[in-house]
Amino acid sequence: MGKKVKAAGAVLVIGALLGGGFWYETKYNNNAGLATGEKVQFTVTKGMDTKEIAQMLHQKKVVAIPLSFQIAVRLRGLSSSLQAGHYVVTAGQSNQDIISMLAEGKVHFNTLTVPEGATINEIALSLEKKHLGSAERFKAAARTYAPYPYMQTVTPGVIYAAEGFAYPSTYNLPEGASEQEILAMMVKEFDKRLTPEIRSDIAKRGLAVRNVVNLAAMVEKEATHKEEMPIIASIFLRRMELGMPIQSDTTVQYVLGAHKEVVTFDDLKVDSPYNTYLHEGLPPGPIANPSMEAIEAVVHPIPTEYLYFVADKNGYHRFSKTYEEHEQMIKKINGDIQS
Image (cartoon, rainbow, N blue to C red; front, side):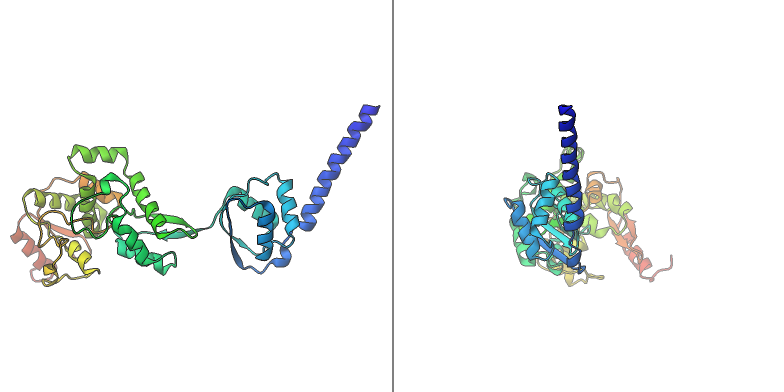
């Protein structure tokens, strides 16, 4: 009989605790009085305990009663599970929602998209425009940042060591990330995309990764339509094999610092080691950050006898084997000769 009474008492105690917890949750775990719809940002730093977090959230008008937040954390057994990071909540969210967010580490990110073929200068301007960093600091980091051996070069005249290796993708940037950290994320993404298979194919062709990226950057900027990339890559490779200058307008535009619909003869004379009209072989470094499709096109070009190409009004290229054919094609595109 005594044991039954004790067991019944234990059940009553547990029931009371559970009931009390439910009553507490419904009565005090509510920040509805703070609901303004405003987005509130806050940062939980490493080492902060539940009390400190509760007080901070109360000061930011996110939590109505700090003690209620602490008790809610304890009831869920999450006192040591709240993660550091930068968060965004909506004023009026319940303690339970906020606790879940902190326990799961759902930190706030800023999104930045790097388009295929973007240059370091363009990425820097985008960062600054979105208030995610300083353009000048990003460019300063890119001038010397080369953490992987295949990025490193002793070629003089390189503007940015990281140009070509800031992989085009969409990035979730942690709040407060430095320009160096942002650049490191992009370069790390490139290294991840450079799979063992691609590295092996590059080695089989007797090429260096940096040179492949260098060529791929020009291919990326020249090709409006991706299916043409392997043909354009083949033309550039043939020109180099024959000792001809690459003569890519994209390298001139890189030096000029802006895209031009029409590159003039005066533009082609711009004095720079990047000008592939004046200098044979590859420019000192990549002129943009190419996609993996452009890199694959250089590694696996389509064999062709073409040496010249010109874009029509739809962005598609007309390919020619001789300079005479090339000139005729230009006249056709410009309407000087009937097709």
